[in-house]
Image 1 (cartoon, rainbow, N blue to C red):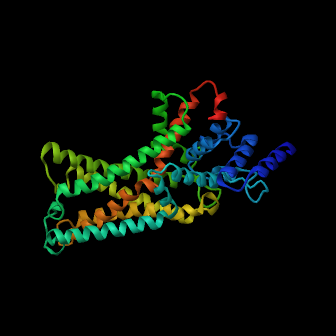
Image 2 (tube, rainbow, N blue to C red):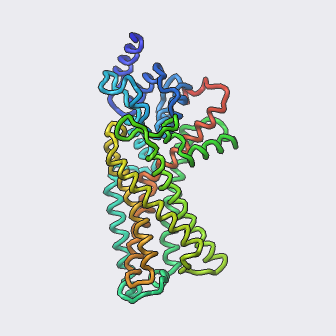
Image 3 (cartoon, rainbow, N blue to C red):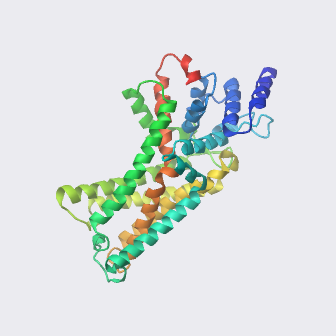
Length: 381
């Protein structure tokens, strides 16, 4: 114990209170203790190292799923004098990662005020589509249009606008992700590593707390609800994306144009996805509001909640649009729905959406290095 205290004092003397220095201090404590070695993927990855450079800390932070289990298991957690809180410091480092690897670099500042940025982007987008609808053909004031969205905005108009914004967002995310990967990567990507990382990401393996019982939310009681609501959100999103993809194939390859029947594949996929995107975000927002403040970084609450609420509003407006597509309210509902979607696309590279991309990269690196026989080089990567 005396040796451990000496280690803590030495690390504390070097620390300046920044997230990076605090992460380095806490990880040295964890590496000496190793009580949580059986938890998640962070602690086995940590034990493969003898020092924690900035790139290592960035990697471990994005490998962390913020399940909270280690905080409640830790004998050195607050109010202990060592003050070890891995979930909080990892969350702080993740935010710094998003800012550092944002592209263009100047746009990284949007992470600091993401909640306000999302609100402004959505408000401006809705206003734009409402005005555009009125200017193009006064469709806001016409009677029922028999569910024909293209009577309000032509297919080409929507394809060009959303294609340009979505394309930029994908490029911005890809550039940041490539830079992040270069800074943390070591080893060749094998098929088995890619399969394992994909499995871990799609099943949200480490939201089970490393033991399968779930995460800690309000206290030290385990629950799988955070994992379940994440599944509803992710797979709801993917079903909506699949609906759009199928509709695109129908339009360009088969010449089958919207509106599609309620029994058609695009509508069925979109409806199921929309329901998932109602249940998931609603549940995640509730858990976020109830969660123990020690589990994360308070400064990221606005970003987290803005993302959750925006996904919920996209889904709610989409389902309302489907329900009232044959009514006189269709044009206004379409403009509002497109405004929410455009706001999401505009802020996608500079908000909570990015965490999924960086986490997959960290999971892939974890799968790669588990297959490497020699761990000697990990201390300097």
